[in-house]
Amino acid sequence: MDNQLDCAPGGYFSISESGFVQSVNRTFLNMLGIQSADELIGRHIETVMSPTNKIFFHTYFYPHIQLYQRVDEMYFSFRAADKQSVPVLVNGIKQERCGEAVIDCVALLMRKRLEYEKDTLRSKRQLEELYQTTREVNNRLEALHKEYENKQQELLEMNRSLETLASTDPLTGLHNRRFFEDCLRGELLASIDNNQPLSLLIVDIDHFKNINDTYGHPVGDFVLIELARLLRETAGPLSICARFGGEEFVVLLPAIDSEGACATAEQIRSVIENTPLGTHRVTISVGVETSRSGSTEQSLLERADLALYASKSNGRNRVSHAEELDKA
Image (cartoon, rainbow, N blue to C red; front, side, top):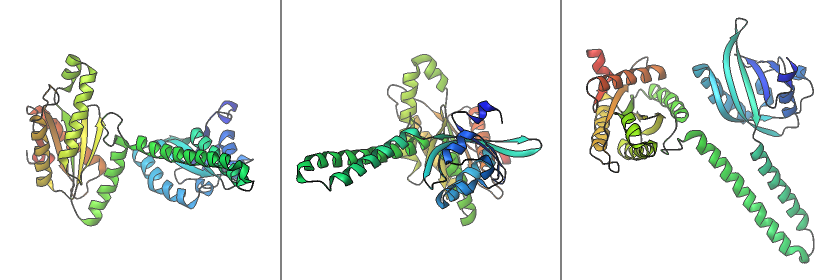
């Protein structure tokens, strides 16, 4: 490993497809308090994880890297040599090298979070010392106690913000694409286990580019926000709505068959067509797919997208189910 990568400001490690460490840089070893790379190379990466993080790694990291060949900004914690937790953001990419599949990862320390934790622990230690002193320092104790509570609250709020940012589209407030893809994976497995259907809607705003070009992006953003609100209100409490990208939205309908999915899609289409968004009226085209034997996440998305294309090709402002394409 060259010196530049070895001393890079981010931790680097490479693992085999089965999780065994092949190479690490000095930055990553320093993060974990490990003296020599020989202590880690050849061992499984899970040896530097707590039991909880091993479960998280199996549940999210492995499936995601296998399915999408990469992982972006996954919040995670390693366990250092002194048993302390080391919170990081992990980015990973799966690629082939010398004829073998390898997973290259970069780990960045969550510095702000660590600073808040250190401040909180420092305040707590000061409180413990001051509680043993005389009544003359009671006022100071109360002030520090308040500071400690505030820092704890700030830490909790930061954690909540990180979780929200990781799963929410900042413009519309709907779930983002990453969260939707995780839900799609879980709901498809549940539908198979429970022998129930799973339906997927892909919703696209008709002629949205004309709105942006004519009235500007602020108006376009307003239309997206209001349409997201109508989508959430109309799709039903058990649905999972997300912004898929640009003017495209997706809706997951667990335990809803093709007939019910088309009815829901038609209701959404009708509500949006008949509801003014400020001074504007928009229409949508919808593609629908319902799980069948052998359906995968990719096939559901691809067939719903084909159905959406059919709606667009047949005049827009309509609902098409992928089954109709099969019959045609």
